[in-house]
Length: 216
View 1 (cartoon, rainbow, N blue to C red):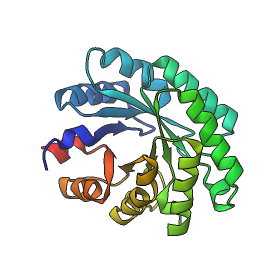
View 2 (cartoon, rainbow, N blue to C red; view 1 turned 135 degrees about the horizontal axis):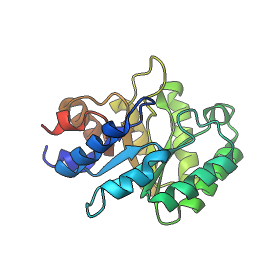
View 3 (cartoon, rainbow, N blue to C red; view 1 turned 90 degrees about the horizontal axis):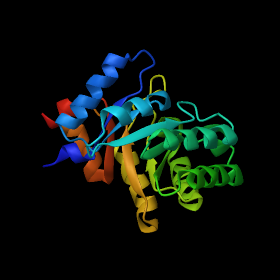
View 4 (cartoon, one colour; view 1 turned 180 degrees about the vertical axis):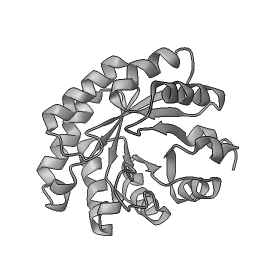
């Protein structure tokens, strides 16, 4: 498969990442012409400065990694991130509310954050490691109703979790494709074979810290 770099959101969300690590990430993204970088909100301005003049998208995470912030806080985070230069927003769904099947809460939160995003893509991280197949479908349907642009498998922060699985990506893709949403696979994608499996299952984005290994 060619042009794997155009699927990759080169990701660095580790708590102990240094500025030097981030600057290296930005240079690698430009060198390999990756689709984007994904960084924590406090580094969006740094990304904007260092990716100026490139086509690399700046992606950041909201309510990360637990999704348990209040909606107001998530909306504020979103507005601030876009003001700082983010091109796309990856929000973490409130998993407890999803498991309790509080549809109104989930849909309204996604809708509020999408309104804050405006023209910028909103991805909803549903955290598949913590969900049953039925809950994955439910999360996808609520994301459609809330006006999201993509659904995303994982934060990569669930202890003992495997992250993205091709079978989950396929299920997500089948659930959202007719509504025009797309799928981002993220978490545990460490080599070319895994990347291709995710794309074949329906993913159009790959969130990974192993982008260079995948394209080399």
